[in-house]
Amino acid sequence: MYLIQILLPLYDNDGTALPKLEFRRVSGELAHKFGGLTAHTQAPAEGIWTQSEDANPTHDEIVIFEVMTDALDRDWWADYRLSLERRFRQKEVVIRAQPIELL
Picture 1 (spheres, rainbow, N blue to C red):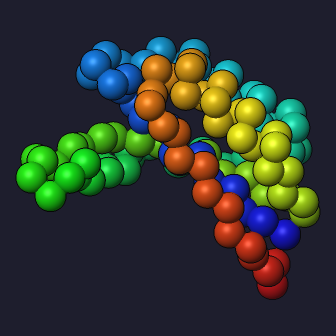
Picture 2 (cartoon, rainbow, N blue to C red):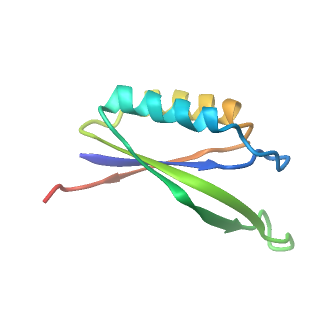
């Protein structure tokens, strides 16, 4: 089994707030495909990173969507990531998968 996490920004690359409707759309898509999801939306997480050694750190506020699945369909996830990058006006959306064991 896998835990898939999607990290989505609250703002696009120009700093414009993204519409809440897009986040609800993602929730609906994932719930429909995977039978449920967990959305961490109440207190946005903060990401900090640098593009190069000389660059100032970049800050971003994100929400995290999680789904669990028995199989990891890499082609589907690659297509979905590209769709999210277009819809959320991002150079890159992070989607990560972790193998998990249910206890």
